[in-house]
Length: 508
Image (cartoon, rainbow, N blue to C red; front, side, top):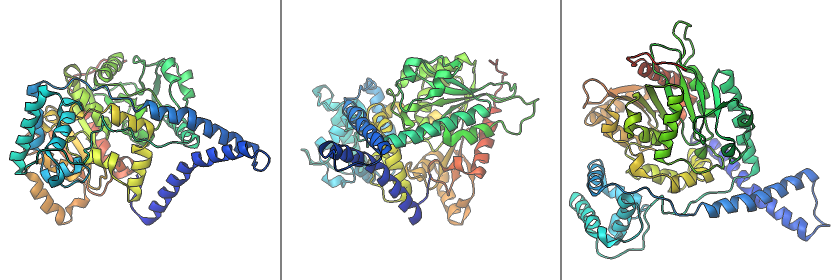
């Protein structure tokens, strides 16, 4: 991540403008040379490149943008009892209902929102539909009345000219990426592969059919000797030889794949003696959110099936689940799947987006907020407007499957790392939720200057310290992996959790 200085702002804006102008310049040049063949010519290399960029824009990007607008295939809604329980859980954890409603309605004041607007939003949130089905009229009206009783607000009958944020129903909003950008991703991918291979990780490729459906191409997948037991998931594996610790399953976030995490993954086994053995690591590549053009991301059921097959292949009977950012969505899938949840010894969540996911902050900050500062421009252009990321969040991201509640985390030893300057997650709100009444005391301590150091606070609701929080006061989203000091802190916590294994594991 980058900061918010003027120099960084100028740099990132220059990068965004330059990359975004490549396609218009190339298309314009090709049109002019076709219309005025004798008056406008540059070098042959530029002409070939401009022609390639133009073809890519019209044949790939425009087709993809049209194709991605197809409606989402929503999973079945929860049972009526489950929906009521979910609604009550959401309402019980809202600290400011006015802000909550306003943000979901894209900064519209609650007084300007009418009853039918609220009902329309509830139909998406709890029934997974935009249709006005009379079967559910009483239920939806009941939600509105509950909201009114809790807030003291009253929503007038009718419909106002306002719009709510409904990710899986809204238009997929993606921007063009040039061939030059994908060439950069290609180079980063090769570098990541070389570093991981050098540090004794073994690459497991997907099926050849899946490999050829990915752009930019990954030549290393065609020469890899090891094949993933999941035909549509690639991953890196470090064999597990330790008899005292559990292996690790690592799930990365939105960005450029595993490149930002390679130092952390390597450092987990640094400084260990031969007698200690190696801690096994499976680092899954989530390519649809890694700045590539790929098939759609797997849904909850298929993702869990594929990960179960990978874990079984390497005989990971018990493991530590470590995730960053979007990886916490897949972590939520695993923690809510009984067979897999029972295999998880402990959990480490870094910058999780799944905690309090019903709050508008993650969806609003990542998909709607107009960027002002350098770090916001970085997330907006290179993150949320990427075609794969936009499609994943708009058509394959169902909040009720992805949300994590405090009770989910307290079933096993869990540590959550939160950045005090996170520009995506409302970390003070998440901190308050996870810590409960202790937040007030810790806020007073922070005002005395203690917020600039690492803090580990045990949940007041668990006397055995099952749920712990590490507050990283000066860190933005993802910055923990770029800081040697904080990586060491994170490594220490992960190794402590890995040591909780009670039984030796059979190894592959």
